[in-house]
Amino acid sequence: MPDDKSNSWEARAAAHTLYGFTDLPTVAARGTVVLTGGHGPYVTDVHGRDYLDANSGLWNMVAGFDPPGLIAAAQEAYGRFPGYHAFFGRMSDRTVELSEKLIAVSPFADGRVFYTNSGSEANDTLVKMLWFLNAQEGRPERRKILTRVNGYHGVTVVSASMTGKPYNSVFGLPLPGFVHLTCPHYWREGKEGESEAAFTARMAAELEEVIAREGAETIAAFVAEPVMGAGGVIPPSEGYFEAVLPILRKHGIAVISDEVICGLGRTGRAWGCETYGFVPDAIISSKALTAGLFPMGAVILGPELADRLHRASEAVEEFPHGFTASGHPVGCAIALKAIETILEGADGAPPLIDGVHRLTPGFEAGLARLAEHPHIGEWRGKGLMGALEAVQDKATKTPFPGHLSVSERIANACTDAGLICRPLGQAVVLCPPFILTEAQMDEMFGKLERALETVF
Ligand code: PLP
Image (cartoon, rainbow, N blue to C red; front, side, top):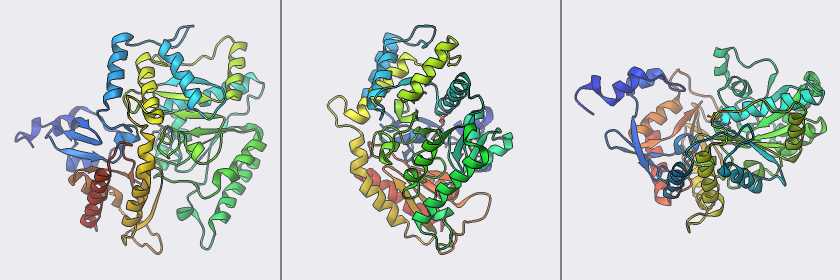
C-alpha cells in the first residue's frame, strides 16, 4: 500500500467513479481492489497481489484472463475491420458467419440472430420483438411477461422489470405487465412435509392460476434461466421444466431460455435448456459468447419466432430497433473463436467444455464437504456453477440477521485470503473459469474453508 493514502489507487477509485452493485459502507471501510490484469484464473491488483477469481469476472471469463487464441483473434479482427454495424442492408462477413454458427450450435433446426451489447439489451430486444410481432399479427394485448422471483435478467428498464429482485422497487419497478412467479427453490420455498414432487406440482398449479388470473391471451412469454444465476445459483426443483412447459405450450405462451450465464457450457451442455431437456422458442445469450473479451449479447430466435418476426417486419418494411455496435465485426470474430474454443476445441486444444465435465465431480464434492459446516444450510449447483447458503440455524434454516450479510463477511474474508467469490443474498457463489486445474480448485476450496473458519 503506498504511503500517501490520498493519492493511492484506492482513493482515486473512490473519488471519481460511481459504484453500482457495491456495498458502499464495505468499500469505504475496505477500499476498492484496483486490478491491472490477469493470468489464467487469477487477477492481479495494483500492489502485485494475485486473487483466484472463482467468479470468472462476472460469470463471463470462462477461458480465464489471458486466453492467447482469443486475444490473437481479437487483434487480428481489429487489424482487419475494427468496427461496423449490422443495419441498412449492410453487415460484416464475420456477422454472417457468427449467425450461421450460433444457429448451428443452437438446439434449433433453423433460426435468426439479433445482436446487442449486453444481456440486458438482449432481453429488452426480445420483449420488443414479441410486442411488435404480436401487435402486427393483430394481438396487441399479448404483452405480459412471466418470470420468477429471484430470476435475474438485467438492469435496463424492461430487463429490470423481468428481474425478480426486491431492490428494483427503488426505481418504481417492475413496470405493469411483468408478473413474477414463485422461485422454484425447493429447499427454501418447500413447505413443511412437502415432497419435492409435490412442490413442483404446486409450482405448476401456481402457473395455471396466474395464467387464468391474468388471461392467457394477454401473456406474451415466460422467460427463465435454466439455473438461476444472480439469484444465488438456484437449479429448478426436480421435474420443474417438464411440469411448466406443457402448460405454457397449451396457452400459446412463448418459452424463452435466458442463457446469459448457463449458455455455452456452464451447466455441462452447450445450453442450459439442453441440460434440462427442453427446446425453447428463443435463447438469450451473452457473457461466455465472447468469453468476456467483448461486450456482446444475442437474441437467438428459433424458426417459428424468426419467421413470424421476419414477416411482421416485412409488413411494415422494418423492425425499428438496434444498437450502434449490433453485430460488431470484432465482437463477432471473438465470439466465433469463443464458441470454437468452448465447444469444439481450437488451436489443437480440447474443447473447454471438457474442463466443465472433468471438474464438476470434484466441484460438487468440494461444495458438499463445505456444506457439512454447522452454518451452511445447503449446497447447490449444476455443472461449474455452485453456491453455499449460510444459515444461523441449520435445522430451522433461519438466515443470519443484519445489514452486512454473512455471505458478504465470508466473501471479504476470501478476498483477504486471495480468493474472489460473490456474496448473493445469504449465499456465497462460485463459478470458476473452465480452465481451472485440480490444484487451483483445491486452492479455491481451501481458501473458502479458511474464510468460513475466520467468520464463524
Ligand atoms: N440475464 C442473465 C441470466 C444474467 O445473469 C445477466 C447478467 O448477469 C443478464 C441477463 C444481464 O446481462 P448484462 O449484465 O450483460 O446486461
